[in-house]
Each structure stands twice: as C-alpha cells, then as structure tokens.
Length: 212
Image 1 (cartoon, rainbow, N blue to C red):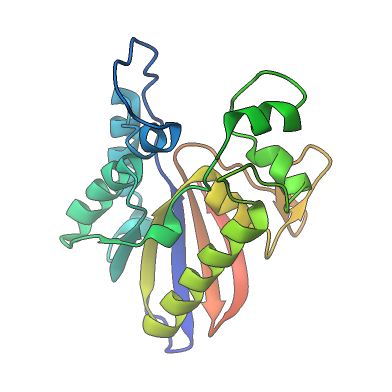
Image 2 (cartoon, rainbow, N blue to C red):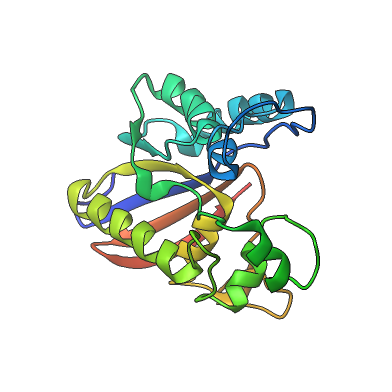
C-alpha cells in the first residue's frame, strides 16, 4: 500500500503477556523498578512472534518502543521481520502506578492490580509519585504528534503498554458503562498483545481499527 504524503499509519501495539513472578524476591528493587523489568512469559514470546507475522506489520518504515523490558521483547520480533532496529522513547512507557496504599484506598479494597479502568472514569486521579490518565495522555500525544510530523506518508509501529494506550485513545474514544473504550460505537479490547491501526491525514485521525 502506497500512502500519499499527507497520510500516515500508526500501528499502536500493546506488549505481549508477562510472566508471574511470585517467588521470593531478596532484592532492593522498588515497585517501579520491578514493573519496568517484567519479562514476557513463554506464551508471550510465542504471541509476539505470531503478532510480528501479521501482514499489517510487514514493510514498516520505522519502529518505536517503550524502554520497559516487556515492550522491547515484543518489539524485537517486529524488528527482525522488517530487518531494522527499533527506537526507544520514554514517553511510550506505562503510566507510573506510584504509591500502592493510595491505590488500595482509591479502589476501596486491598487489591493492587492495575487500576487503569477506574482511571478512565477519573482521568485526573493519581497516586503519590504516580501519573494520572490525563498526564499520560499528554506525553503520549506529544510523542504521536512528533511522529506524524517526522514520518509523513509512512507506516510506523509503536509498542507501548495497556494503560498508556488506553489513556492516549481517550483523545478519540468514549468510555462506556463497563469502563471500556469505544470508537464510533464499537468496543475496543486492550489485551496482551493487541494491535490498533490508526490512519491520519496530517494530524487528523481518519480511522481507528482493531486488527485481529
């Protein structure tokens, strides 16, 4: 597919599934450091390879990626298929969770799971040392704007994270009653891994499609 100079396609990709590390951890790592270094599970590696074989992700012009380990492990397969290096940008990193105690209070229980669905409903909420949905949207949007300016008429693969992707898509999507995103009435599923195709004319979004 040949694009004109005003059209740019961005493939927004969530990394594959990570392994559960529930064993003893005699380390001095912070929760943020642990999060940044999470690795893919065996199934996640297989899913990443399968994802890279999707026809949409062949003949990519450039690849950009979060510097979190799980994102780079997902990107390496797309990189190999396209015979090019991937680039890193910290603006593609996951939203910082921050203080776990704040999360438990916010969610009215003792769970420590990722509260990104709740933050879709309360986009200004953030924990101590954490980020809100709106703050994450801002840095993701700044990055995408630079990409659209630099790679006009190109196909760009961008590998990021579930919360960061959801919060970026808030610019174009609605949040339904189930706290899921929908675009033009169609619900989007941000699972691991997943692939969204965004077509832009200059800086204007023309279409948003979830690729199976």
